[in-house]
Length: 402
Image 1 (cartoon, rainbow, N blue to C red):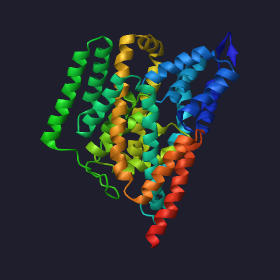
Image 2 (cartoon, rainbow, N blue to C red):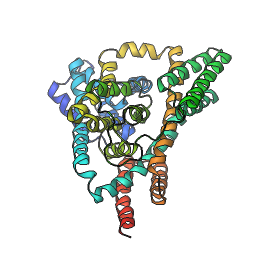
Image 3 (cartoon, rainbow, N blue to C red):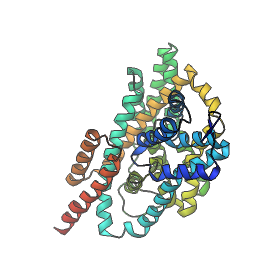
Image 4 (tube, helix red, strand yellow):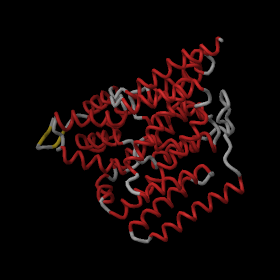
């Protein structure tokens, strides 16, 4: 209800409302945001449509899952900071419980059953298609001029040569900031520096190997500590620009490339499981934490990756709104976003090499990609993943029987 134009609800009612949103959160962030807008803006008039658009624009620039941030924002409007906390927790709780249960199932049953092995074999190329589609969708929105395209390509090359992604993203933001200030040659020099250092690292160390990318089962080189898992999630949450797909290269770097507690195939399986749930896709971090550190690992990495989404809203929403209006900050963030597109592109190529290893896998990848481009329904992702699992079951088990 509203009192003097401001929404007011009890803590229990707030939690129940956003828990229901979480249970119905199928179809990715676009569908989730549309559901929240329909009920709270169009039906119940908590805020005006114009204010909603402005708030959404702020969260689209900030790192973190926008739908979760919107829930925290609306909860704070109706119940203060405690209400924001309850709303955010209610929204993410169904997906967290579901991915936790699926992670346990994956560890205890999924790896040993030929039936489920075939299903996951179908999931993996479909996930590669999901990421490829996300690269196109995010890139089309973020790469609005030839400079941003150039930055994205440069960062992708640097990533494939093994450059440190934090260094690449910092230079990406700096380059576009310099370009918008008219210092083009300085920006070109920064790009040349990134390319030269990446080339030097490649010549010195060689291209990064597949690590455990193709290995079956669980091969944990070093089991991560709980603080390491928390920091991995926090870093992923702070560097998630433009949607949950942008967290993929950061979490993969920690879990597969550096940490070695997951293989690329297991990483793809975690993405697949989160894709069929009513939850923000970023919940796949819980799966990564569970495989790295059991239930405590799942809890701390989830805390880390969602912490920025809560903190930016509960602590600094008004300050962030003013920051986002600063054009210099816009230029830097636009450059960083272009760099993230480059990182996802490189990661897509690397994961695709793992996922598409046969004609059957290529067939599933192609069909999934066509469906994702042609079908815009909010249920498309879940249907594609479930359909790929069925195809995997039919095709891979049939091949095994021959």
